[in-house]
Length: 273
Image (cartoon, rainbow, N blue to C red; front, side):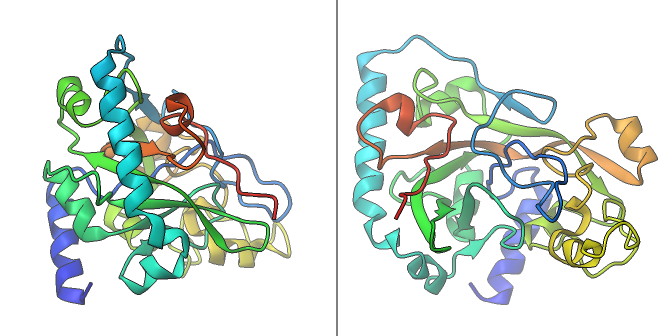
């Protein structure tokens, strides 16, 4: 994507609350040099996330869900080589931040999803995990939808009896950092006094951690940070987003035919070798 096209996408995303989808799951505390905001393998309800309720399952729901799985299995074949999407202009969301699942995003496809256009063969994001060798291993894809969609509208895309759509809420970002900054991968790593960074005197590794993680370093800010209250966010030098992005849903089509696995909340583990 050229700079003009990228700017156009960013402008559209900043005007509407939704932006390209990504999933931030349970972030842990700092442990040595490990990332305090590393993404966990399982999502759950909480202050930072809401999910759609389940609905009674129908045979039509099962058929629609299997159609989505079959479509992804066919269309994602070439993306098992992670270099292919990168060569096509996909961008990795926060590549310097350790995560259990990495989102390679097609901004054009994501923009279409947030305009209400759903194409099961062209998901806005591809989902990868890190394999034992350090390479990215394809595990699935993510679809997105506008933030103002009703449950019925979401159900028409991916049945609520099969999957739980989720949205990210109560997100505290440091003042001076916007959602579009995060989309571009700018977590303030070039700033020395950004709230959320570790004091450089706290550890010999603090500067390197700050450079890699920026405001995510101390675990207070971000999509599953410790701060979820507007007053606490303001006191910490931040601003609260009531909802970041729109609705999103993950699909993991490669681990058999069990719909609970394919549309579940747990990120598949990469092969041992």
